[in-house]
Image (cartoon, rainbow, N blue to C red; front, side, top):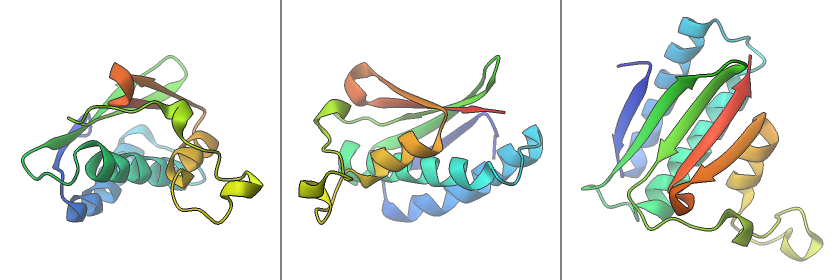
Length: 132
């Protein structure tokens, strides 16, 4: 497995490969143990969203993870082959009216656990930044 990229078919069982990938990245970049769960949870959520919502679990489509080194740490770029989405359309799962609703918690977790998150290509690409 290449630590710079990971290509996954859009089937739910592909999620299990994310942990091995993150462990390899952690080993290579000597990531502190307290940062590891934040990276793992964020990437798992992003890949899960890409498989389910982006690619509609279409096994002929792929989710790609690309790792980029930045001046402050690492940026993981998760890209799907779907139509994209507008992140501002995701309701705040902490609002009282949404507290019992399903959905939106993955995006919320990614924002909370990373140092910065942004989107490209109409939401088809999520960039998750971690300062190291």
